[in-house]
Length: 321
Image (cartoon, rainbow, N blue to C red; front, side, top):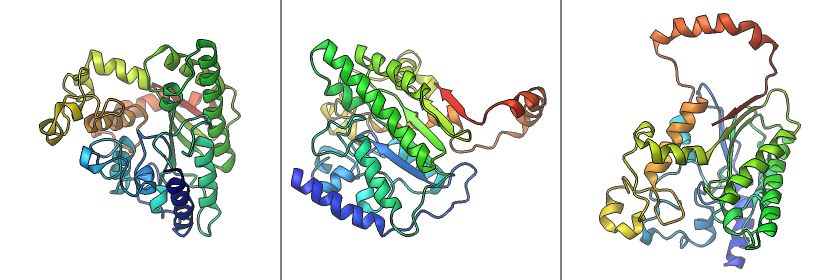
């Protein structure tokens, strides 16, 4: 698998460099999406690198994704541009790989730093450049927790390093000229997950970002809490946590895994990704939704009341959820 993955990386990089930068789209918010991350947002890089064997379509996985449908980045892309994200090994700008970590410690898989190297290779091709009006999504942390050492002290150091590397990736993209970030946190509700979130907050606070950066930070742990306590508020029925869609059988898969949180015990089912996309848009207005006419008067009044404060504030927007 190592040889096949490395070979596909080389050939995929050549393919990606031959593709021109995405043309500007007629959208209110963003003109492109660029993705870095792990299996939660891999659009087919591992699938391509393994010759279509991982994740296996025979096990219900969809179009190279590690779930039974499009992931949340695909769904945002469909709403913005009419098409899902495309894996970098297939010529697109989704550089995520299943198994990737924020720390550069995963064997044979491009972690965040190595995905940034692939992106730099993409930028080196004629016609490709950083899209200052594009949205750049980073989704890491789960594999760092899964692979942390057993010893508590070593595990804490490992997660701290992952948080440092995660933040360093944000700084590197900022220095390249990226101006719109959506960053997810550690997606595991465990002591290490909570520690990782605290370390990531500390590391992000120490960054030196451009004044015109828009920075959205999405809190998976908060999403999970709301999912358990009030799934209807997220547009979901009560979720089964005692099984997976695969274990529930063909009927559950045919039903789209409705009401089942996990597809395979590790990855979210497609309805959860749909809820994530809706929730992210609700919090950060990623799709540039136009307000209903009845809300304009309230908004204008709000702008009048806060106008002087807006004029004085820095242009950096940091949103926590």
